[in-house]
Image (cartoon, rainbow, N blue to C red; front, side, top):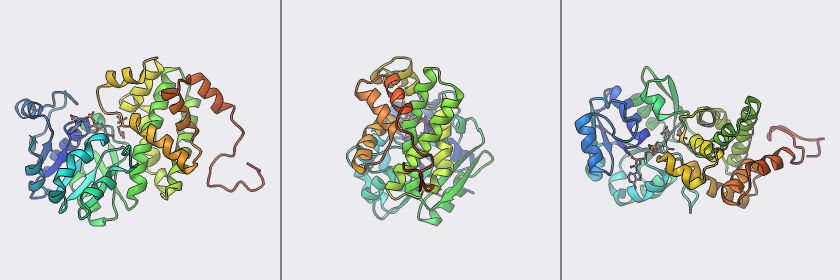
Length: 342
Ligand SMILES: NC(=O)c1ccc[n+]([C@@H]2O[C@H](COP(=O)([O-])OP(=O)(O)OC[C@H]3O[C@@H](n4cnc5c(N)ncnc54)[C@H](O)[C@@H]3O)[C@@H](O)[C@H]2O)c1
Ligand SMILES: O=P(O)(O)OC[C@H](O)CO
């Protein structure tokens, strides 16, 4: 299916590039917006991104551009693939133009001062816009290399979901719809924190039992937190919950995992971030999440442990000791514990 107007993708990084190719592969015209004119000029001339997914040819139909206002005016559907730290500042000046658009966030982060998810920021900026979230186990590199992939478009607006399915569905990319925007988006933001822990654990030589324990307890922890905020726990059993958690905690292609791996090798957080040179949202999320969990009184030992290692000078060994020797507990939160006394 092709729409008559081009589709806008905002962000010239890995995900913006992969998404633009996916859309162009479905014969959509794409305006791929980035802030750097030199980068856009290089992409127009060489048909490749000089910095991200460098070896992936850009498909015909993608126009790298730097005029944000003109790009937004030209399109009805806008995918946002900007870092969470930049999204509000970049888009706020264009509130009027954004009001009539379909805005789909792909950014998996949480705003520091407000604890808002990215689609909530889009709502703040353009309350009249139609808003959705695309999330799932979606490593940019694998999408660009046509690995079979599934994702979730989540919105209260069923027509928006259908339109996004139409432009993205293809031989290698399948899109499921969900009405639980909050749960889908929260899952994508929370899993980054656990991927840092997983990377760290791998660098320190963890076994397969340990990986399984970590991912499963991470799922329990993030679901407990999400339920406290009013989310539907069932969403966490889907692609945007456990699906994304598994891929991000298992893949060396995940940047959050790479940050954790570097920490496990003994680098400081600053060194790890510098070595990566790309966005790893979990580095920001851990701070606000720890604070929010305390505020809400939600038990999140993995989050507390990672925070202690990153910012309070604890060693991984001390934290792991505390976790393993903690008081005995029952397992799945949502099963009755009557008679267990815990
Ligand atoms: N890469 C993936 O596999 C993937 C998959 C799904 C979702 N995401 C999400 O997409 C978002 C973007 O990640 P990415 O992988 O593209 O990051 P990236 O590090 O590959 O690229 C980030 C891009 O944002 C640009 N940028 C930074 N600050 C900017 C600003 N103020 N104005 C305009 N552009 C700015 C950078 O120049 C760069 O082009 C993140 O929230 C990430 O969680 C990424
Ligand atoms: O590379 P990461 O760690 O930002 O993860 C990318 C995607 O979110 C995986 O679904």
